[in-house]
Image 1 (tube, one colour):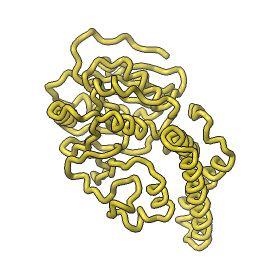
Image 2 (image 1 turned 30 degrees about the vertical axis):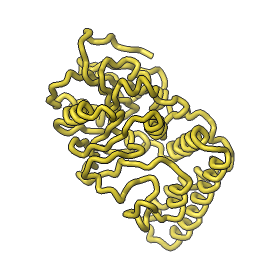
Image 3 (image 1 turned 120 degrees about the horizontal axis):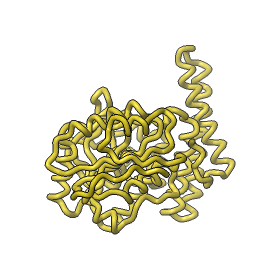
Image 4 (image 1 turned 90 degrees about the vertical axis):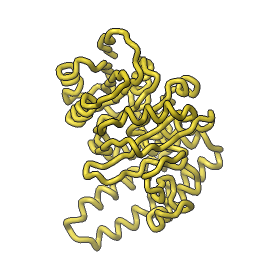
Length: 330
């Protein structure tokens, strides 16, 4: 790991930490949006680069001399890379920001003000928009067997506006009002440093995915509020890194799901969860195979990608190798 020298010591209010892996163009857009932020708070920006080979680290050095750059020799994963950045931060607040996010004006000012006024909040997150400015649902319920059954039976698709049947994604919530939630998507998390000191950093057994779910659960168990705050906003491109190798990332998601369940649930619950996951991918593989036969040629490529994903997930579950450390992304 190579770390550029820290900028001169000064009082910092907010440390923004960005983990990057081969998303050069999006990282530049992200850093440009941070440079445009006008804030009364003193902000430092830390980029932790996971051994990118697309020139990401070089352009940070060249174009953004004020940014603290940490270069990892290998891809250490999302959680561990964020931990490296958080150990270097000097702020009273920490914002974990995906490299595929563009921060809209006054976002940080509003989030920090909100948390300053509400001392019980450990984590908050802003309204998240897609590039076409449509709202993304980022509020979550924590994983339960019932939520997974709703996903298996497509109840979350058929009745997404039902609190009971919507699964983990809170599509019944319009994301237009302040709301205390169980979990938040990890594309932009504003964290109170004092709370993080109490609860601890990301659990590094999660290479990618579910590290923020685990963190939110631990914050809730420690008595800290997790709150969605829609008066601040970002634009999120979503899945920029995972789009490079969707099959591999689907496998990493299952590995992280299993790790989460083993950490927080009983052996019986873990076995039941694996059975639900097996049925889910098996049934969808069969149904989409039938659909593939009868669909038009122009749509077959997308269905074929979905079939490959379900097959890869089934193979992983049946192999029992979901406990492997996910350090194959390089």
